[in-house]
Image 1 (spheres, rainbow, N blue to C red):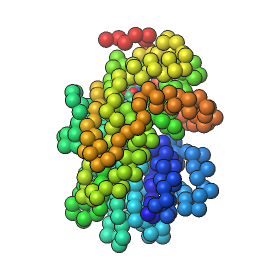
Image 2: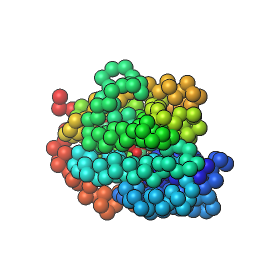
Image 3: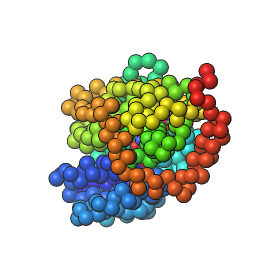
Image 4: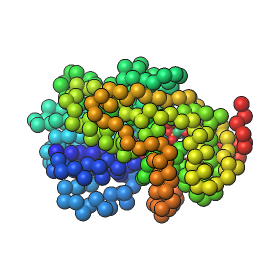
Length: 346
Ligand code: NAD
Ligand code: DAU
């Protein structure tokens, strides 16, 4: 396999590179990453020793660069992890989401379209394209009703991947995973934000009433699913949901983190809600399970291991939480925390 993984310096990309490099089938592994605020080259330092590995700093929306790279490296498999990924940032400014998530995906599709020997384009998508799931579990056929600009950009990209599979016969497949947690996640997302804030005795800003539910999966189980899907015969834009089937209200996640770190509940602050905040995500992943994949990590055990990782990697997240991150934090949370309360308002 001559594999191109985009977004390798981000959370899932970094974990997936490690997963793939442990496989003998990988003859060459190139990762492209623009190193935006979310990309961290330090994550890849230890991978450079592997002669099969190459890091390229580039923009997936750069047509010439992507075409030249795919040609030069004779890429036969592409896993697209690069994206703008934070819902709150997409509400503040959606343009980078359009450029990277929509244009970038199209550029990658064009770069591999019609390539002799090209085997698989895997689009790493999200359950957010379905919007809020009021009850039950969404199968792959659930209608797409994205709520945030982030989710809308991912749904648009999925549409292009399916169009390329249908119209041009590009061998492509889409995975839609639920919320991931684990090592190397940027501390803007709920779990690493709350764990690192709690470690520092800082407030934990819970949105709204804290009862929104997310369907948590450990990143290693997601990476195993991506690898598994690459080996399936599916090539016609099929969708596979990826979920451990474990939805948890944000308040319960917060309580678990506080308990694991032995920190007081008084750290929790209820803050103004996210606009358009999806109430509940819950996926039915039985299509993928029937092909032989299954998640291995339970939520409580996986969360404990994740908390331990952040506790042991303070220099990693302290470096990430410096500089521009502080401005981001003040813009996103400053007024909300000043206007917060110890209990939900409604
Ligand atoms: P992340 O924000 O941690 O990492 C994204 C990476 O993409 C970063 O390294 C960043 O530098 C890079 N990047 C951004 N714009 C780029 C561009 N124009 N060109 C090249 N590189 C660029 O994101 P993540 O959580 O690792 O998510 C990876 C993928 O998985 C995304 O497509 C996301 O939509 C999807 N996903 C994430 C989750 C989750 O819970 N984290 C769940 C389901 C799906
Ligand atoms: O469902 C998959 C998606 O999960 C991915 O596609 C996205 O890339 C990823 O960011 C994630 O989206 P969410 O919006 O669900 O994740 P986030 O960690 O931002 O929020 C999780 C829940 O926690 C959500 O209900 C909002 C809430 N929250 C989040 C933050 C950052 C808070 O209450 N306070 C916070 O400070």
